[in-house]
Image (cartoon, rainbow, N blue to C red; front, side, top):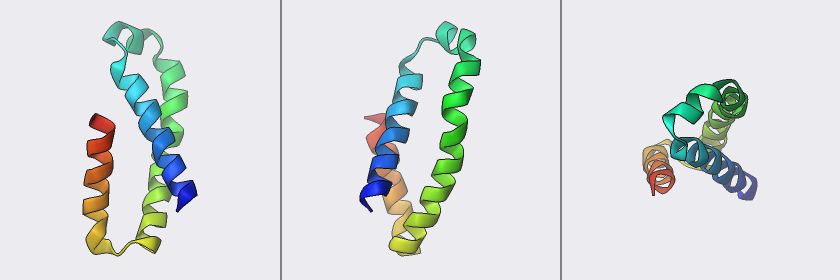
Length: 73
């Protein structure tokens, strides 16, 4: 679970950095950001599988909502 938490923090940090960039920077650096964000899609899929293994499916939505809230804050 510690490794999962670390991966979630890494994803959140990268997404937060991208979100804070101005549109013009996102456009001109889109290739670089694609290289950073694309692996996170695969990682998020793998993390969901890990969560499903460790947390009952009924709690999955609650955990995802908490993570998304933490990323937005």
